[in-house]
Image 1 (cartoon, helix red, strand yellow):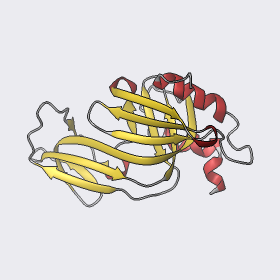
Image 2: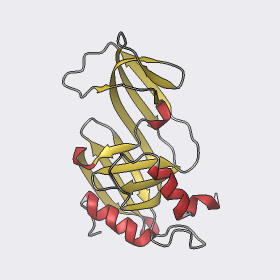
Image 3: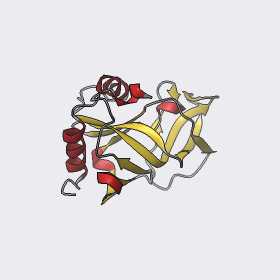
Image 4: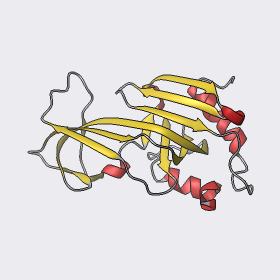
Length: 185
């Protein structure tokens, strides 16, 4: 557990999900209260823990959920919001194949895609709504809704844990709040 509050571990976890050409600008330890990720994937088949590209594959709609408190790292780059798990955890997955998309963006699967890696990186430009409220003991409650219907309910703690392992937490939390548009709380 103490390894969670280590800036080097946080950077490594977030870096694994950052697209090429982007740089982590700020990252913090946060707590997810609710995660509901949606995605539509084309030309693929569903295997045990991954989507596999297949030219004869179908369109698969995925919902990935977790409605319990979980330690995460939350980061921003120049163009993306990045989320990484602090520790391995489980999600509830729902799948629907052969759906009619009604204008939903379909992500073509060009290489194997682990289900665990879905919902870790989102363009900042796809944030439809972000609401922040003051929480208990200086924390900030953050609710983010994406254009595709994905949403997150997060808690941004005031402090980055005990022991000084996250010395930039305060400034990084402020940078994330400023980027999301609610920095004046």
